[in-house]
Image (cartoon, rainbow, N blue to C red; front, side, top):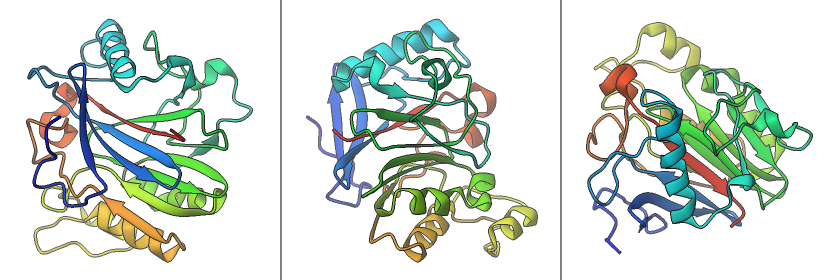
Length: 251
């Protein structure tokens, strides 16, 4: 197995690759967070979303992922992400509401955060610059897809409180080197723009998690916009961008 890249700064992060699929893996509480990479170990492209290649390609990519990670498709829980701030608990959701991993179909229920008290479930969100945030606490597990709007709504604090989160992981996302935004975004987040007109979403998230009482926050410190060979990036690629998967489960 290849060694993690030098830019992976925490010993807790491990670069895994099985059956051609590559992902970063790290513990969070009693759970495991996984973040897929955009490239396979053979140099191919791994896109877990239905766009732009279509549902058949997504089904094939997702099938390869679950085989490589030795997971069962029926354990997965997904929602239709809308760049908002809605957090949903998986308990009580109808099976069709959490979507179908295989074949790849769009879930019926809209949200940008999932939480579960069942460690056998695998929470999944798709990202390409937005923050994937995994939380673990005595109340369960939560996985968030956070853009600036979601961060501004308070979904992060809501999830932290809901599961009494004590540990968190911030996966690969667009970094302060590349996330140039307007003043309205900075104002919504309650921060100031840097001299280069950027904000640090991962840094803001870490500060808010610590302020909310989370004891340990680990960050991948990897910029999806910078690392063209490793990550998908909407900022870099526009609508041609694929999506990574962020996964969180009890094992």
